[in-house]
Length: 308
Image (cartoon, rainbow, N blue to C red; front, side):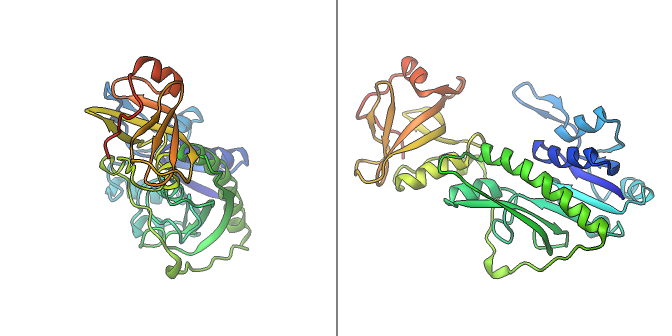
């Protein structure tokens, strides 16, 4: 089976790797163009591009998926199947090209959490379980017929970064199983129930400010759902502070939201209901630190307050 793989970030790598390990013919890889990244704006390649070059795979990096030269080159490959993992929205002209169609791997149990940030939103909303879904592409994003799903629990203190890594590995196996089903001719798919759908929109930096007036469980879920990025933040006076890891200290005590209840070797903060212990933190312009290290270099007193 001749496969074109489309993907860009780390999440896509295990899926590309497992297809190669199982001797599938990857006739080309499509990924995003190189772009400046980081403070120094150094031009950076996607993880998928680096892997493709290491394995001498044919590579495309179109700026526009509608580019006529790109579309023509893709058609010449005469691929049987397009496999899409963490890539851009494909136009019908492309996803209808292969004889077996195109399928996508999505990091949720569709139709739940349709959109670009399913891992973050599942944790922010306190889900106890998530998973991955493969589905055939159609014009409306994340709405195609489901092929396979696999479930995984979300532990109470899992961050989005930790779930990302678990789901990328879980997803790779589901991608492989999906390709095998399509190859065998035994693939069956079923439509999504739109009545059960929910959205997972892109999270902007301005959406990441912590609301200390919420109950402690909601604040804890918000912080871990944005860790390690785009990262929940608060302010102490004019100082911008990112928070990466927390644990629930108490679910019942009542205090002034955002107030510092303890700040010696640990940091306890009041919420709308309950209190939260902060474990990993980062002051603007500094590196990420454990809380004991942070408190040795930054003055926080009991009774101080994080801005709401």
